[in-house]
Length: 246
Ligand SMILES: NC(=O)c1ccc[n+]([C@@H]2O[C@H](COP(=O)([O-])OP(=O)(O)OC[C@H]3O[C@@H](n4cnc5c(N)ncnc54)[C@H](OP(=O)(O)O)[C@@H]3O)[C@@H](O)[C@H]2O)c1
Image (cartoon, rainbow, N blue to C red; front, side, top):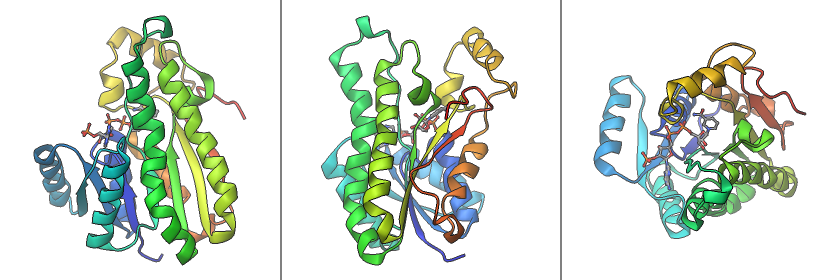
C-alpha cells in the first residue's frame, strides 16, 4: 500500500490513539494536534516507546486560525495531508432546559465547526492531487439522539450531513468522505460516566460489552485503501448492535 500522510485530530485521546496506531501500522505517516504541549510530548514518548512515530502540531480545532496553522505545520513536517480523520470531540451533557449557551457553543465549535476548520485547509490540495480520504468520527447518539445530549447529538448528526455533501462535491476528484459512528467505547470519556449508568448502557448493547478503541480504528482503516475507492458518503455504525437504523 502507498504510504500516505495522515492527520488525526484528537489523536492523543482514547479512540484517537488507537487510530494513530492503526494508520501507522498500515505504513502511513501520522500526525496529530495538541493543546497542552507537556501532555502531548509525554504521549508522543509513550507512542515512540511502542515503535509508533507521531508528529505533533499545536492547534485547537475549534479555531479556524489554529486549525489552518496546524495543517500547515503538518505539511511542513510530513508533506501534504492525504488522509484526514476528524476525531477531536467533547461532551458537555445536560438536559436542554438547563443548557447554557456556552455548553451549546463549546460542543458545536469543537465537534462540528472543527470539521470546517480542519478540512477547509486540506481539501484544495486533495482535489489538485486527485486523491484523498476524509473520515468523520461521529457517534451513535448523532443517529438516535440521547437524553441530556441535544448539543452533542446535533453536532454529531451535523458531521454526517457534512460528510454526505463533501462526498458528492469531491467524488470526481478521487476523494472519499465517510463517517464512522461509534457506540459506547471504553475510553476516558465513557469511563467518566458513573458505573451504575454504564451498567445500564451495557445492558442495551446486544454484543454485551463496551467497544474497544481498536474496534473503532479498524472501521476507520477500512475506508483508507485504494480498494475502498467506491465507498463514499457512508455512515458506518460500530456499536455492538445497539442501534441498527439504516
Ligand atoms: N468514547 C466513546 O464512547 C465515543 C462514542 C462515540 C463517539 N465518540 C467520539 O469519538 C471521538 C474521540 O473520543 P474519545 O472517547 O477518544 O475522547 P477523548 O479520549 O476525550 O479524546 C478527545 C481528544 O480530542 C481532543 N480535543 C478535544 N477538544 C479539542 C480541541 N478544541 N482542539 C483540539 N483537540 C481537542 C483531546 O485533546 P486534549 O487532550 O487537548 O483535550 C483528545 O485528544 C470524539 O469525537 C467522540 O465524540 C466517542
